[in-house]
Image (spheres, rainbow, N blue to C red):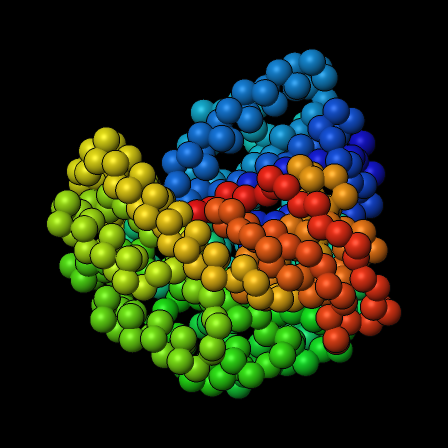
Length: 465
Ligand code: SAH
Ligand code: SF4
Ligand code: F3S
């Protein structure tokens, strides 16, 4: 009754949660459970949740309504567990107010899942496992991935930065880094399994430190693994970019020239109130240095509009900084008050909903224009694209990314997923480039074949701006 259950996992939130779901799959299948791709035949449904903004919670409440009906339909034979950041954030509140939830577990407690599931199947009380750990890095757990070209590899967990708006330090606890040799071994086995692109993950990934290795060392060690064509990383914090790291990005042929560098706001007063530890001038100096040391680097960012007390003039400063810096793309969010954070405790969420909307619309428009202008400069150039999937909108076309993270669509004749293809860019629309394949890239291991024609029409656009 408690073993060989069918487990269905649904993942929300960031790439770290995607990776964690892969760990959970491994922990549960090691205990004899099997995995299923649908809730219809599942004995256990797990929602791996996010807490970063209120709409992340809203999605789960909505989903729980549906699962309530599923439970009734299946005569209460289905176990529902909420895991991840929302579970850790809301704790008892979630268990008490939602009868359909059987147990909750936070991001450091996934080794407890077999027990929580077993207890529930034996008719026990609602369960929870919410201890945050200073040491848990899930060493020894081999993530079960869906295979393919890309893989996430968490290299550190938690965050010590305590930005005043952010719930992550409360949901994922203190910063800790994984053993470097274990990471390299994981990347080696990924490469042997045919994975071409590895993204090193952490909430604060460039704070990585372990056994005398820093993040620059780790990047070099993983990018040196034979068979790995591309190494990316996310998300770094602007406070931790030594020249050694910029040098690895600049010089290593397998490290992608894209840096996601969240600025959050363009006003020094707000940056201080957010406790971001840099000011606008030092951020801009860092961008200038990156562009000098890494020619062609793409830089993207995150912005929050409507942080408590943000005035029109301060929003105007953010607007000007974005005009001046010209990020390749940006994720722009409305401030959302999060339980337990300094901002929730000490500041009033006083920017009106309509002001937040107006500010986000203006910034999204600005960024769309800038992204369009930057991308048009690539028309006429030949860029290397790693093919990641078939285009859903353009039958016969392939979709991939440039080293600088630009989505690119081209006719797929003669090429396959995982190929590194030279693509002559013919036009750009929004965040997407469209082009014509001119051959496999020099370093690639398949014999070169030339595609015949392009035929890429209206196609994919990024969901970001
Ligand atoms: N560790 C990453 C951030 C992860 S969260 C980093 O520091 O870059 C991703 C983004 O969500 C943040 O960069 C921020 O822009 C946004 N965000 C975080 N908390 C938020 C909140 N309370 N309201 C709105 N956006 C938020
Ligand atoms: Fe949150 Fe700041 Fe840590 Fe990023 S660095 S996860 S924004 S506390
Ligand atoms: Fe969300 Fe947790 Fe990631 S709050 S963004 S799932 S770290």
